[in-house]
Length: 82
Image 1 (cartoon, rainbow, N blue to C red):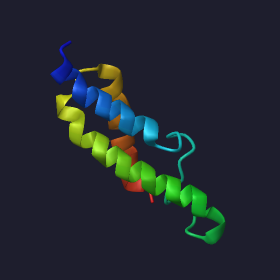
Image 2 (image 1 turned 90 degrees about the vertical axis):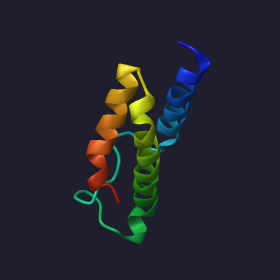
Image 3 (image 1 turned 60 degrees about the vertical axis):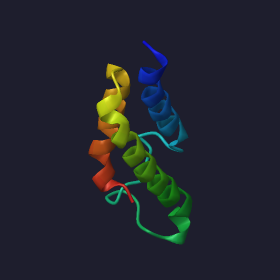
């Protein structure tokens, strides 16, 4: 694969790696109330929402099926994030 084709995949990988929580552990609207006690979880969920949106924008340019599946999973979860 040439460098121009790898650039979106590298950016996407970077975005996914920057998400501070796993899909399993991320706080959702259904599981976590907005409160001071849950501030760290709420902020991690918000970061996941922003970063998954950034990764989703690159999805049409990514060829790697595993990366595409991971981004799709985050995008499906996105409406439930904080």
